[in-house]
Amino acid sequence: MSPAAPKRNFPPPLDNPAGKSLTDEGEVPEIEDSPRLGDTHEEPTDPGLSARPGVKAAPPRVVMPASALPFPGSAPPAPTVSPQQRPPLPQSQILPQAQTLPAHHRMPDFGPLAPLMRDPNITEVMINDVRNVMVEKEGRMSYSGLTLSTIDEVNRIVRNVLDVSGRVLSPESPYVDLALADGSRVNIVGPPITTAGPCVTIRKFPRRHTAEELIARGTLSQRMAYFLNACVVSKANILISGGTGSGKTTLMNAMIGLIPKGERIVSIEDTPELLVSQENSVRMQTRPASATSSAITSTHLVANALRMRPDRILIGECRGAEALDMLQAMNTGHEGSMTTIHANTPRDALMRVETLCMMAGYELPIKAIRQQIVRALDLVIQVQRFRSGHRRVTAISELTGMETEMITMQDIFVFEPDPADPTGAKGRFKTLGLVPRILERIHDHGIDIPNNYFG
Ligand SMILES: Nc1ncnc2c1ncn2[C@@H]1O[C@H](COP(=O)(O)OP(=O)(O)O)[C@@H](O)[C@H]1O
Ligand SMILES: [Mg+2]
View: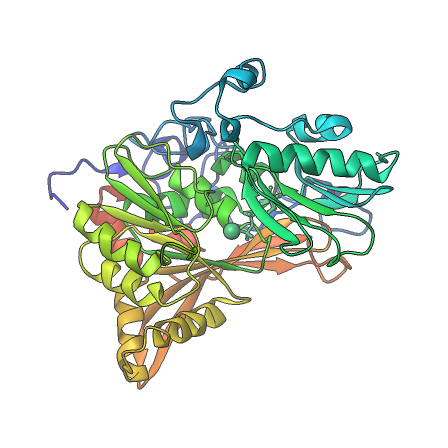
């Protein structure tokens, strides 16, 4: 990092105009719509919580100025454009032009399901059977309230989807997985695997949730988002961990939006769901083996990515031997890389990385793998989906080093659930009073976060 980098005040100077001690809560001026430094950082995750009887009133909600995230220099907000749609076609143009476009660029006619497909708040549509069409809306699964009149109607939708994608569903090959022109993913399973006609699961192409939107949804606090913004700009290597559907990719996409423009990004994924709008970016997708060609895996693509002069490498999900290549890339000048992993705690996430590294088959001693992990990774962000449908960042943990053969970690932020809430989704985000080691790198990048930001 160039020493000449201008120091950026963090958060904006408004918070501490007189340069007063930030540890002294009483001295911090109260300014509406800006965060208070030196507060205890107990931010409510749900504004409704304080309204419930017997629940301690939450501190007033603080809203950052709109320009706060991302920092100046980050990429402009991304239009949600799937890779199949380049150059992008406005949604309104796709359907009228359908007849003139090649079949795989057309969207199928969803018949009675069309309103569900159009609703931007619906993220998944699932046809279990004729009377049973489910949707996921705002992270919650529910009945759509829509019934199809006969099995023929289901079959018609299935036929339309298969027609535009040129795929076949037959008793010999009773399931297909395909991508639509707008990037949505469709899985269809038919008889004899299913007993009540075809079952269709449509996962709509995600739109980008900005960091502000995730804050507004209570997924993380402003303070956490600011810290993560600083980490992204300072090129921390980040692992996002969580269960299926916990919001890993959504959070990663919001963080990709915080990468400064001008940096060269190479992304690698199995299914296209990363939203990289920065101009200097290349996306690559793995390919399963077919009758005529062998598989191209993430491992191959990470190796190739290293020859493409990337500043950062983004891997949609780490689930195989590419974990080791990813760590090596992170250790060799590609800081600022990110990926997601399926695990339930930050500690589990590291164990999973270890296991995946072993799949590379080099018979590296466990200590050597752990050393690679510690040198490569800076942060693990844990996300969780709660029964209420809320997604929360439940921990932001930092790797701090190794003691004997064990990796040491410290939590910087955690989510503390309210014991009175049966879903466990209500609670507070807390700092644990630990100053992260990464702060030094953040300072080197010209971003000024005071130590007492962390409680
Ligand atoms: N913070 C969030 N709040 C509400 N819904 C979310 C949030 N993050 C993700 N979702 C929804 O959850 C579903 C799964 O999200 P995704 O990021 O793909 O999860 P994962 O990558 O962990 O499998 C999507 O339908 C998405 O719209
Ligand atoms: Mg994902």
